[in-house]
Amino acid sequence: MTKMVDFPRHSEAQASEFRAAGYWNDDTLVTYLDKWARETPEKIAIVSTDREVTYAEWRDRSLRFANALLGLGLSRGDVVAIQYPNHPDFMIAFLGISMMGGVMCTMHMPYRAGEMAPLMNHGKARAVICTAGDDKYNAPATMEGLKGPVPSLEHVIVIGGEGEAGHHAFETLIGGAEATEIKDPPVAADPCILCFTSGTSASPKGVLRTHETFVSNLRIYPPTIELSADDRVMVAPPFTHVFGLTCGALTLCWGATNVLMPLFTPELYTERLINGKPTVVFSAPAHIAASIKAGLLDDVDISSIREVIIAGSVCPPEVAADLERRMPNGRSGQLFGMTETILIMQTPLDEAPEVRHTSTGRKTVGIDFRICSPEDDTEVAVGEEGELQLKGYCIFPGYLNNPDANAKAFTDDGFFRTGDLATVDKEGNVVITGRVKDVINRGGIKINPTDIENLLQAHPAIVLAAIVPMPDDVLGERICLFVTLAPEASLSFDDVTSYLDNNSVAKMRWPERLEIIDEMPMTPTRKIQKGTLAQQLKV
Image (tube, rainbow, N blue to C red; front, side):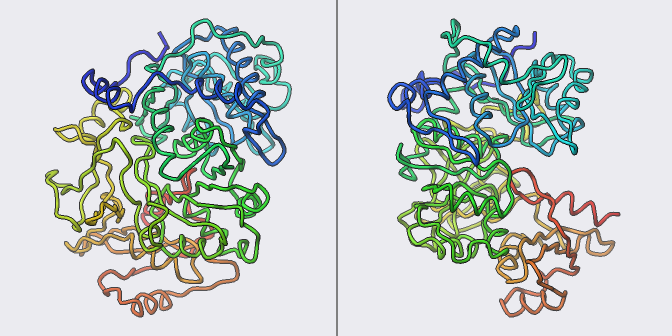
């Protein structure tokens, strides 16, 4: 049995509570595609660099793809993996999988067979969707090769090109299928997406979302940013990550237009901001910092933008402020979410810049939170630093087939331990101050590097900064600073220490080594991979 039928669920008491409060209802993703295809069929739903898709076309193509999947022998509860960039066909495939009751399992674009095999096995994927590949990466051949290590995998579906023997061409499947209504459609309690928080470990952390927990967040979060059907929403993070996927799906839920950027480069990011004419932008701090430091956002017309929502990692306040100074009609604010929580905190966009640029704001409706000591889960006082813990209608109930991770993830009274350090003020504004695991222990002194990194990234020569521990026989850990530089810029160790001294940073918190690198190792959502940097220090 490969169908996704046995997975962590909320208790009956929780489900009853969430339904009684109106957080959960009977909506599925298909509810909203049907709604907008019926009410605004000719409206542009998705626009990319080379293509536009109306709501009517989206529904027609997704429905045909759903029937094509059923024709291949797949059925409700089966898992379909996908490795594809932010393109209209991704969203067409996603809704097609949803229409026939399947579960979409996302694979990041940089992944190769070694990273994908454990994830596909964990989800028991029966089919995979991929690009036609190029001379650098033969995606169809890679997927075909995974049929051995992934026994459940039967079908390789290729978008673009005709497809080789044994593979299915996406366009051929759609063209050969009828747009007939699905006889056994999904219900709200059915699973719809499977995303992973960490890719290659022997025990993957898979988060399975039902339509209830996913769609409810798509309805409840957007009013905090006043999203409407009139908006054009640009989503910079990849759809293969829950941040990007959720933002793309909430655009569907509200009948707005998705403005797509296939893969991130500073040049393409800037082009989409200018020519895509978005009104709302979801972005990671690294997207913004790289584009500004490259001079690409100097003297350009981004007057269409009403608001930029920054998330994915802690945003240096100067990055948010620098972007806002360049938007004649826009504001920048911050969002907090995780694979395990989806989108659950937002800075009020009518607040002063010092709130919007320094905090992730306040909890949304239906979420409970507290700041606790990481050692014993006791709440700390207002203004004190501790671990952010969460409970509510869209907080996941547990990792898929990973009891060890689940035992560590939740407190005895059911709060999820995020692993994020935070403070909260009297108004309820939460400031993420770092990660519990990133704290450096230098001779017994605990050093949280996040505020130092934020300060360093305001240096005109520095694009990205990461502080990581390096082993030391005497102190246990010392501090190493990795940076990438702006074009034509230079930086010395003395430059760094002088800058920190001038900004009143205590000497015990200064880096003791500087490493200038050409490219910062990043996750697909543009978070710095500090573990990779730390490994370089051990070589």
